[in-house]
Length: 369
Image 1 (cartoon, rainbow, N blue to C red):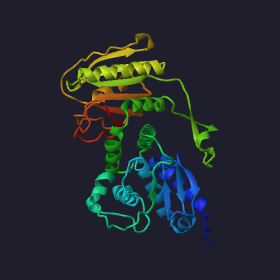
Image 2 (image 1 turned 45 degrees about the vertical axis):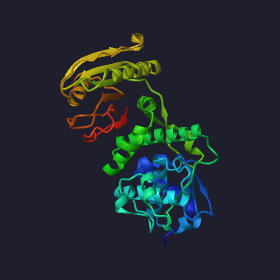
Image 3 (image 1 turned 180 degrees about the vertical axis):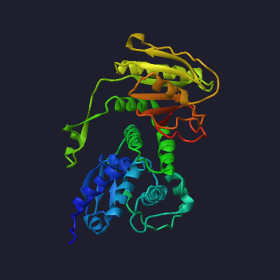
Image 4 (image 1 turned 45 degrees about the horizontal axis):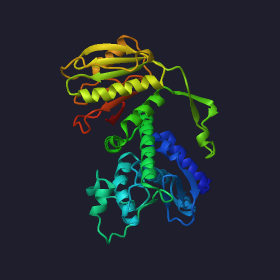
């Protein structure tokens, strides 16, 4: 006899499935309060809560419910709840659905029946699709994205966007480390469309914080999620190892960008009592310097000017047995010579040129300067 789960239990199980199988979506779903809402047609989110109609959830197959949760999370990952402005709410929901549903299907999700799909909208933003939709389009979205609650000021809206973009940074990093980031189309949408809009300095600081606090402890469950009935391990501090910083000196990194990065490396040492190994590299290693807090403030100097090859920096780390807690690579990304295998430590690529036109790195997280 098949046991029928209560809607609330089904919601908990759907979110748990995301945590295990699709950690990018699962980690973001954990940020939301799950609330029953019998007045809702299907489900909705506003960046704070995930509301659901219990009757709708009760009738929905589990695979489609998992897809629905991922669908609502994707609205927030793309900040659809902060970008509606004066646009018509129903039409904005349609545009958002068209922008994300194909990405979810390509990532292996099963969506509820009558999910809005149009091949001609693939790869387009919600704003672009909104402008293409006719006024007489009466198709219903499969869920609802609502504006953030209250009457937020422009500053509060900006902070909300920043908060979600940093959360997306964390979720992307975690999913990549687990080898469970969805397909390339999804990755390009998130990493190359959303990530460049965040403050790269904030993303760098967040990456450093996560990279230097990587021990999980089940003895002290993460208090953030206990109220939701979800027990996850908490991050505990540990002794900070060496931070490796590779700087592309092939001639395409400007003096101004180097000054910016010198300030950020100095900030690393101010915040973390650690050792920073700076590697200057173009097509080969051109120099190496070691800094501690005693060397502040830093003044990095370009050494090189040849071609570009990403492999020598990683080879040096391995041959010298540096064992960094992470590696930060400053580069214009104009190269396709990467190591054959991802290193055991996390890698952050700080891209100085935005849309670089080369293939994405096979590992690590990319943020744009």
